[in-house]
Amino acid sequence: MAIRLDYVLKETGSNLVRNLTLTLASLLTVAIALAFVAVSFLIGTGINQSFLGLRSDVQMFVYMNPGATADQIDSVNKSLESNPQVESVKFLDKDKTYAEFKRLFADQPDFVESINPEELPQSFRVKPTSTDADVVSAVGTEFENMTGVYRVEYAEEYARQVQKSLSTLNSWVRLFGVALIFVSVLLIFNTIRTAVFARRREIEVMRLVGASNWFIRLPFMTEGMVQGLLGALAAAGLTWGFDALWKRNFVNQVSFELLNQIKWTGGDLWKAVIMILVVGAVTGAVGSGIAVGRYLRV
Amino acid sequence: MPIPPRASVRSLVKFVEHTGQETVIKLENVSKIYKGEHMALRDATVEIEKGEFVFLVGPSGSGKSTFLRLLNREETAEKGKIYVAGKDIAALPGYKVPYLRRNIGSVFQDFKLLPNKTVAENVAFALEAIGRPKSVIREAVPQILELVGLGRKEGSMPDELSGGEQQRVSIARAFVNRPLILLADEPTGNLDPATSVGIMKLLDRINRTGTTVVMATHDRGIVDTMRRRVIELDRGSVVRDQARGVYE
Image 1 (cartoon, rainbow over the protein chains, first blue to last red):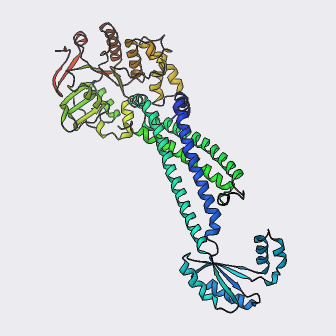
Image 2 (cartoon, each protein chain N blue to C red; image 1 turned 45 degrees about the horizontal axis):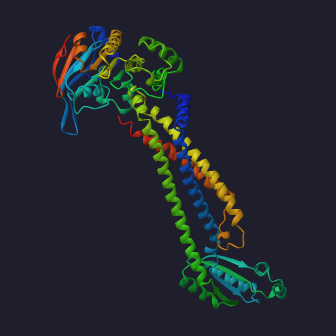
Image 3 (cartoon, chains in turn brown, yellow; image 1 turned 135 degrees about the horizontal axis):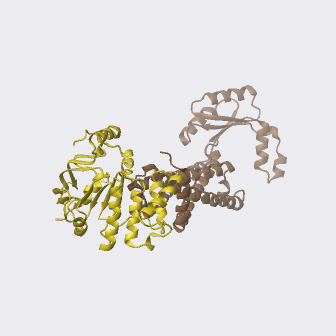
């Protein structure tokens, strides 16, 4: 049996309008919950991206003698690359080293002036497979005695600690986000259940006159989907506002040393918005289907 | 005359043409047990033919409502077989139950009208719900409202109508799809005697179109006046089945 589209649309529309206060109330709660989901996603992504660099950052620096020959450099490079404990190696030649040096001491031009680029040591930035301090130093000592190596330096312990707590924080934010998705699903589901309960009589009559289960379900499902989508759209607006506020107040503001590191791209914002739209629409539709199911037992 | 189980409608029609009679409802040793102990219906065997008007009588809790609810598979029987239009309805898969119900109109003591729809919308709803096209609905609704005597009330809301008028709307809704069977559970239970007479006249008229009517009732006056077949239930058992019977 074909289900008439105009019937479904008419029912959906009139039910949304008829329960306007309920619709609005649920819309708002859903919007707020979903906005929190999106925001925690953005912050999680931001933390991840800003400290991903740091976390996966060089744990070990192998400095070459200023006068090291190309052969020496090459042999250190080869043995680093073939070492199973080493995940990645990046070589900084004289030009790159000087560029970085200038960047680091940009606020001290006199000091920069006083340095001859030729005197700066070239270096390897090494990322071992493990961040464990013992493993890192074990790898380091292997290279300390190679010809041409000036010295090996390790990332400081405190930096490792910061990374560790940040990654813990990040997991908490993600967990919070997942919990909020769960809360939104329950909220949407509960609202729909109330709406379905209010119309159980209508469902009863439909069953009595021989409406098929899908025929009864469909208007409720589109109604739930529209509600979920509208809530998600409002949440998208809130997220967008949060994004603008965050960018204006924190990102690249020197006064917030940690917060200004947490940033995300426009693509991440879109991802978050699409995610909550999908969560809203799907839970709305599926939640309604389940809520109606209670009254459809044959 | 027994009907071969699971006879298809077509063979049923041939059968009817042959014998001139058609069993539309058949219960074979049907028992319904609620919650594992209470026997709402006890080994009931009943045959009802097309076009019959049957009263189900008996005290409250004797199984009248259960009898009706079993017929449109609101309930399922624990024991025995129930055939409607020759089909073993217990064997119907869930998705086909709505099609069974399209052949069975239902009327209740409390009308079960939708309070936020007009009279015409309430009736149209029954057709919309089974996916009838708009053109059919536009034609059928005024026609049936005329038939039940509510031609001028189509725009009224249910709460603007009297009890008798509300029951007429619910009968219109049950009958608009021209079902094979009309089940009525105490349709006059909430109405005064004079109004009840009007409702009974309407049900009688519907019965004359060939629709089988099964009506559960407590109303002695109605049963005694109409003199139709009476099936009496007592604690779930059929204790009397009498053609042109009386209440007691």
